[in-house]
Length: 447
Image 1 (cartoon, rainbow, N blue to C red):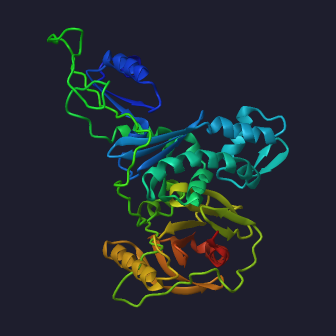
Image 2 (cartoon, rainbow, N blue to C red; image 1 turned 120 degrees about the vertical axis):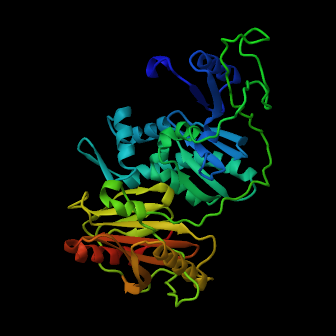
């Protein structure tokens, strides 16, 4: 470490997997003491969950996965699984003739976002690979379900590790229906390290060896010499094998996701888009969106069907699924002729926490309230109303951050979810985007 950043290291935060033997962690701490006057330790799931509101963490890395339940920054339950990137690649490799491990990894990662990939002359369909990976993901998720069950109620779950970049993992957790919210770390492979930097560090000097922090010597002498450096180590509690956490509070979910695929495409829209999709307002006339699949047929399609994040939709002809954001249950569609252009469609599913079909007035009122608040706060939203599109009625509003780019939002409710479709277009692309949008809005429904 000193060789990497120089001799003037002031603090070291040691982030370690909770399964590591305490003797090994102590060895790492002693090594860190040699290069820094202040040393802290924190377990990886505690660090990763810092500031996220998540109470359970599923870390899926290359060698395996580990699920942990947290309460007051303590690990109260932990389960491990052998499912990791290596096992996933092995399954994909078995289906690709002559493929190397690197080939399998490339195909798997490509198909995380794209509908197809190529292995030599062979075209590999995402659905084929997803069918191979689903039972493996479910095995890892079973470990997560075990620790979440200790909480005795649905709680927010955070997905970390390099494999968490695959949307299928978040989708399968979502389908399992034991989490109140499924979050994916912004940088899943670095979640623990980045989270550790957000944690408040203890003000006193501690050592390992007990679940209760205590003062200790820094050297072999009972009285430290003036040259001795103060070493502080954050105590990491040992996980309880069968802990009960009935008093763990549930993170309430009132999401307000942002419909961007990437900053360079959406520009300022990515930073300010509200995707109110599913809140509403009291004291004004409200629109009651359709709560069930449309009775009328949507315009002709031709691009196939997209099924993920608990919803399905028809892909418009000439459009493809090219990206998304698992933690927001977001799918991104772009024209196949211009995948990097400005014209695009973003689709998101937002859990409501109640059945909108049974409480349509509530869903509509909440949506309008959020719209009005956003406008009062200076948002560029406008033209709230309703429109029949693709054979169904949707709540609509506009968003315009640039003179040449407009986002038309269409919001429908289905069961306990709000389904929001954001259709971004330039003046030149308005007809093509709206035609594609009609297909998506007309066909989207929960699976």
